[in-house]
Length: 270
Image (cartoon, rainbow, N blue to C red; front, top):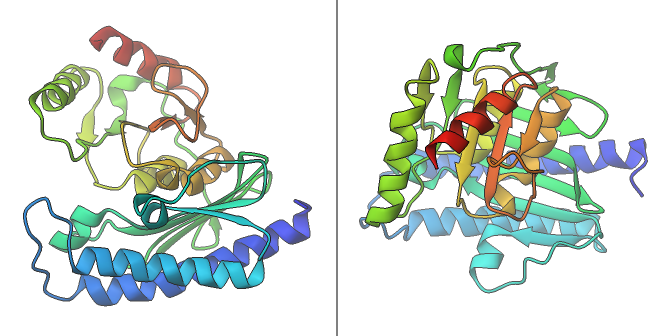
């Protein structure tokens, strides 16, 4: 388990699954969507579910002994206990708000953990046709070309991605705007792309210098991206500066030079 041949095979299988799911997303993306405010209904749910079923069926046929954790299955009351067993962790459609609005930052995210360590990662944006891949110890790639994190060493010259999340209670919104207000003085600019997985890939390929997010959906947002960031020479960590925990719903990623500066900047806000 976990030798190089099998890891390459796992990656190839995940890429196949991601591309198939990507076709469903692409079809839905260009259809007219009627979505109730805040109720992510109908098309989103249908597309989400169809993609997750497709991915899990594809992988379960190939690897019947592996475990599976998905956003949809977990939302439907499935268990999300991460064990040491090889476990596929899937977000069938990250960036649902973007999907609804026809904003082309949506992706399929597939990660494989072995002994709880993210080992294979695939993040695929079918709208702009970008396929990010990574295998632990083997490098990270965008459409087959090697990628690496930026070499930016000053936070003030950095492009930072963060998300506003979906909650709109006053406490959450105030905390969010307070962070943004403070960070705008400390970075070059800020981006909210609407996809945690694509933010991680943005750091991995150097188009973003740093990103962080607090209180997102779950491990399916970060399992694929974590491999890709690390293999591109980046660091994954908790925004507090603690070790990255795939189950914590808190994540930060940067090149190696900016971690301490980001942690300090966030510490000063709290």
